[in-house]
Image 1 (cartoon, rainbow, N blue to C red):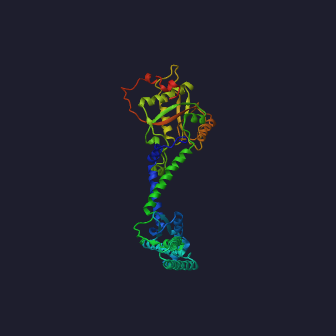
Image 2 (image 1 turned 45 degrees about the vertical axis):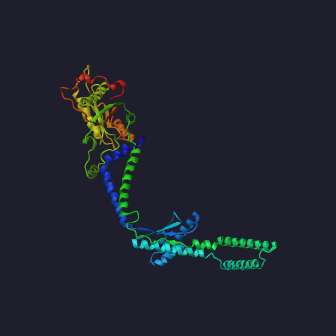
Image 3 (image 1 turned 90 degrees about the vertical axis):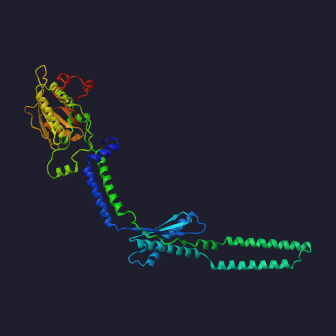
Length: 467
């Protein structure tokens, strides 16, 4: 698992084999979300829109939005609402302003009740319009306005004098009079165009247009809570706990130091792999023995089942499984004829214990003795605690055969078992790996293969890999 890519099948395996634990964590996460919703009071949010007529640039609109949430406006709102214990700083955290399409600024207010949220949004919009009008109107210079008005009066007088001079001129009797009237009309036209340009360039008129902001109706009273709602907190807490549990399983699997491959296990024990045997999948093979409240809790939550073990592969019939055990016994006979061995099984490895017991039973049956007269070694199963491994001293047994399941023990734990064997005077003569398989059909006595057929070479034997 440490070097494998995380796939959906891995997530599915976690959910399938840890469904009880995940269900409990989801319920706990939902309760935590519910408790958080009880601590956080419900909030309601509504908005009011302010129209800014005239030509506004994007930069100017953003500036007006900043003004709507400035301390000058919010302090006026706090004073107008007269809410005791609520300062402008707290209100500023509950007020937002955004620029919308069409020169519209949307002002939003959040409060504990729908009525307070509606009042807050309306008051912020009104105070913003008032404050903006004051800012735009305060730039008008009274002296400049008086000078502009005097200039307009002078233009009017000049226009009137031009009319008098045009009437006093000889009405078209001479060429000079016609030329004079023409020049006066050109002067009148140029003067009128200058006055029009002056009116268009007057910043006071532009400010007057822009200062005429409009609140587009009162804010609507909110009908639902603002996020995060109680339902969102409950669902979010459940999903968060589920995600943390799944990620925790994946991290723990990637950081696991349990050995899974045959060469690694053989190297950790310093012995040769003699073969692999199959144990039909079932409840005893997957659930380790244990008593007490802790073991009961683990069994109820389903954490006593290894989730990172691959699904059991399909197996042949009972005869094919028996052949694997007999091959291991035959290899032991070839190595140590007519000897007695200890079969060392790590305590808690139920799959290895079942395999060791069947291996000892097959060695005791010895259906096909060697032509020289020697049979299978006599095997005695011994369970060894991994934390403090201890084996009986060497007496009648010649050596030790270690039987275990892959992916259950670290290199340090296996090295401890090997050291315990050496301390007791037992040489580790080999390693046998046990794995779970889906039980196939059982052959009847009339249809079982002959004993000679079971000794025929298989694909494992042809490639030199122990079966």
